[in-house]
Amino acid sequence: MSELQDRGGQWATGVARIEGPIIVMQHVAGVRYDEVVEIRSPQGSLRRGRVLEVGEDVAVVEVFAGTTGLAMENTHVRFLGQPLHIPVTEEMLGRIFDGMGVPIDGGPEPLTNQYADVNGKAINPTARVYPRDYIQTGISAIDGMNTLVMGQKLPLFSSSGLAHDALAAQIVRQATLGSAADVEGTASDRTPSTSGAEFAIVFAAMGVKHDVAKYFRKAFAESGALNRVAMFLNLADDPPVERLVTPRVALTLAEYLAFQKQVHVLVILTDMTNYCEALRQISNIRGEVPSRKGYPGYLYSDLAALYERTGRIKDSRGSITQLPILTMPNEDITHPVPDLTGYITEGQIVLNHDLARQNIYPPIAVLPSLSRLMKDGIGKDRTRADHGHVSAQLYAAYAHVQNVRSLASVIGEEELSTVDQEYLAFGRAFEQKFINQDFTENRTIAETLSIGWQLLSMLPKKELLRVTADELGTYYGK
Image (cartoon, rainbow, N blue to C red; front, top):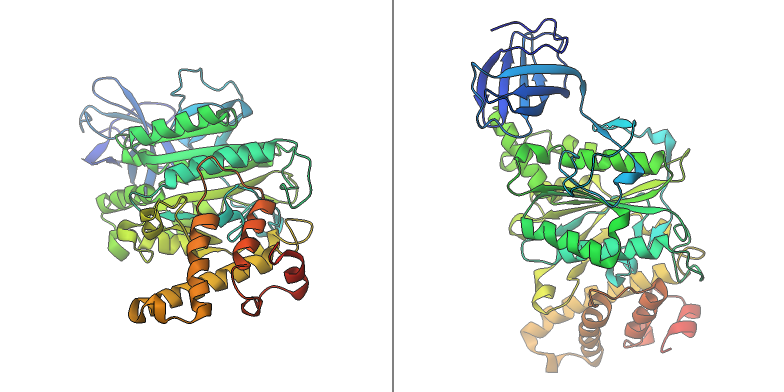
């Protein structure tokens, strides 16, 4: 085995072990974490990898395309002395790439001399601008009660069989068209911060099936949003190791667009559970001591390194808003992936099977859902002065509905008081008229609040303690 003391672009052998997507190199020096590695197989094909761990004279390398076909004695390796970089340019919008940033839409490589490190840079807290401008998705359960704010990271907690793919496609379509167009109207009609502004979508899929990837491509193309979307697709039969790079590649392009080209960027990452599974697989192969449910102890910091690449900074008009999507195994919100995600991010949107069984779309469970930055992105001059009060009253009333339903299951609806029966009627109407809406329906915030007041008008005024007397006089029963 030849030593790699002077790498200098020279190919060398030194493979001590091959296990899964991991190779271990001996007799190396001067190797750095995250350094890019080129691996030449005995058949002459070229693969890429990166350094995971370094020791006194050992380097652990993960191979993006896997190690199938590699042999210890005839595999040649070259360390390139720098982390993985990808080309970044506005021309990547409207294009489709694989998880490593290589075009798969039949088009040429991006023409640019700008390259960026996929590991990104941490945003200095002192440079951050507090998010205050809301993004209108056209979905009442989000805009009305869990408002998405520009520069926020708001994950979507789903589970198998729910319509999270359709919801993501609808948000992409409506956020893009609603924000990119120069729309006349008041603050109650459109988002003032994004009307007429550049708005782009960076979409990254990790471990998705071919039919899911095809669905997103078709949905974006048919809606006309594809020309403002850059898609990065890591499919289910692609190497799991590639999933660890895909979100970093997507966020690298988002950072370039937001902070160098002054574009408002919405980043959608799906499915973060597949990402974490790939991380667990690599951790197990490396022989690391497992933590909860076999995930590595650094799962929190690894997720934080992705989620915290979001926000607004003082010297840029652009922003990055992140909407990660994850499926909860067995609908367990205490599972390590949703649990840690909830700690890092500013809330969550939770989808519910009970609503889906009633054919309610989107099946958003508003009670466990939360947007921690909502209060700073709504109100007078942003949405409408009564927005916060209407949201709080709807939440309180729907929460009381759950108590009434529990009571009715014991004593029967006919034994309920008149007010409690009114709450049951309110609950059914809330689910059917406020939460439920057509996949193509794009509601303005004014329409959402109007529906909210129509529903609150089903309850006696004395029950509405979270809205003001002036608001009751203006909107109740109207």
